[in-house]
Structures are given as C-alpha cells and as structure tokens.
Length: 267
Image (tube, rainbow, N blue to C red; front, side, top):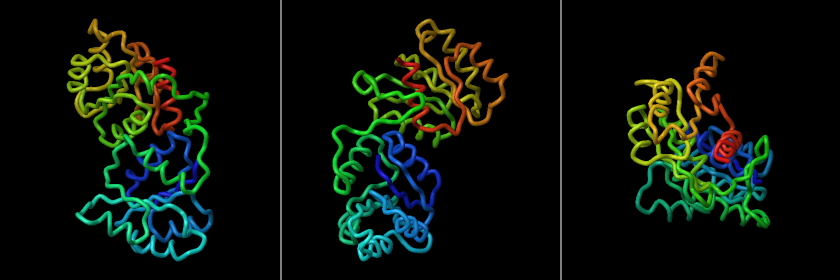
C-alpha cells in the first residue's frame, strides 16, 4: 500500500482518482489547492504526488519547482494532471520537474500500472501486485482472466465513471447506459454476466428496468444489483428484492466494498 497525495481542486476528479487507486489498496489524501498540498506533503512525506496544473493560488508548476528545492520532497515522484493538453506540454512539464504527465479524463485501463511504475522508484517493489482489502476479505479471482461482462445503468455520468474505474482495472468488460431504454437494448444485444443499476433515474426507474429484464427469457438469469444514493428506505429495498435483485447497495460506498459485492455475486 502506498501513501498517495492528490492535489486537485475539483471534488469529482479527486473522488475518481481516490476510488480507482483505493481499489488497489493505496491510501489517498486529497488537498484542494497547492498550499494545502504543500502542508500535507511536509506533514507526512507521501510515496507519490498527483498534482493538477490548473489550481487556485499557487499553480502546479510552482508547486513542483518548490518541491524539487525542498530536501524532504526532492525525490518524491510527482505526476502532473491536466485537462488542457497542448502540443509540447509533456516536455515542458518534465523540464519543470514532474516525473510524468497524464491528460484528463483519466483512462482507467493502464492507469494503475502507470502509477505503479513511479511508485517503484520511491519504494522497494513488492513480490506481487497489491490487492484490494475488503470486508469480508475478497481477492480478485478469475474475473481478471475470464473478463465477465458488466452492464452499468445510471443517469449520472460521474456514477458511471466511478463504477467503471473500479471494475475495469480488474479485467471486467464494462458497458454503460444512461437510460432504461439504452440499458435493455445493450443487454439484449450482448447478454451481460451482471447488471448494476441505479434506482431513481430521469426517465423510467430501476424497478421498471428489472421488470423488463426478468420478463426476458434470455436475461432473467442475469444477477441484478441495485445501487442508490436516494432510495434508502426499507420499503424500496424489499421491493427490489421481491423483483429479483440479489443486492441492494447504498451510496456512498467504498470501492473495496463494491468489489467484494461484485465478486460475491459472480462467485
């Protein structure tokens, strides 16, 4: 497990990075600006820093220059993050003192391996890649090999990104849909091994979706998991289970817990 400091002023971006890195057991701290990041880094030296370039107050460029001049932080790997990729930016950022450059939005596939490459420079390499710590403990099993197909339906783009970022690095083939209609069309086009669906959506609902799934002979055997941030009442949970759902999960949910639930359902 590595101690990773994320300096990012957009909470959604910070949440996605924390979620993805947390899957692999890394401990993430978040600072909303460079000044707070500087204090956090000095208070406890991190194994790696992910730093946005466009920050309020001190910029990411100024932060990395200061870090390279500070003996306590001079050899800490620092990776730049930016949504405004321009020709020549990579070379300029490396010259400033960054160890690498990643453009946003982050692509989940390969992200953990890219970060691991820099962690190896700051820490002794471990004998095996880190695995998520779950409660109950569940290790990534054959999913990374057999690549189960997971359909995720949610009308909030950030929710889709979070689940995708959690599952994709472990080898799951994730398809996403923003509406019930899109979800049922994708399910019929290619039968998934698991369906994860929001409950309340702008058009239709997760309850409408599961009814259509269970009414379809080809789909009714597919495990169906609900995840919601709004329908916490016991009556909604009971209704979901009566309709055939195998899990009813509540947001916010830790990435390790979500993975444990997915592994349990598919296992």
